[in-house]
Image 1: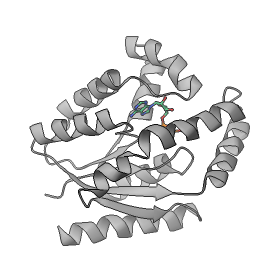
Image 2: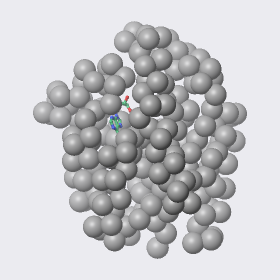
Image 3: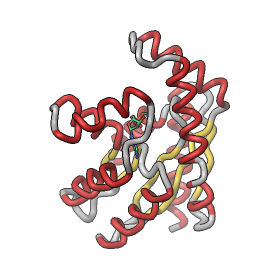
Image 4: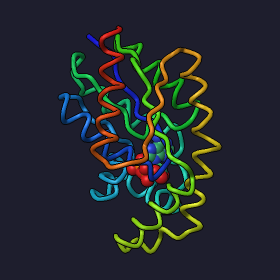
Length: 194
Ligand code: ADP
């Protein structure tokens, strides 16, 4: 069986939309830590109460909490169910934890699909979305902070996976369907080779 996929990229690049489309088309499990956190907030669980302010500020949830939540999700995932990770890992500690979690279950990362777009485009998209959705907490400052945190904490992970020869870069600019097509090509290409 092929391994799992990681969809990586800055906020606003369309990761969530694309991960969903990719998972649906291929029968993979879409594992989004952002969705899992938002679900905790909706259900008003302990985790939800602890992370609400963090999400509102556009900061990262502490690694231990994030990794525990992913571990729980993996515990109920069948061994033959391929996963596309969306928004995880986001820090070096999370990447190390994921390597261990997968290895313990006989799983592995097959490819990292890195979705990219220029910062100006990302900023414009995020501000447009905040306005359209009436998300008044998503101020230009919070948006700039999100982009900065990504550059500082998550961008360095690209090197971690590049060293393992797993990274594929995909242009995230263009119509949603065109980007989906590029991602499917990148994922397929890898499968044929492995
Ligand atoms: P976005 O693409 O807008 O950043 P996500 O749905 O991926 O949205 O994540 C929403 C928020 O959830 C993040 O801003 C962060 O606060 C939190 N979060 C999600 N995944 C992680 C993670 N792996 N580590 C730490 N925080 C996370």
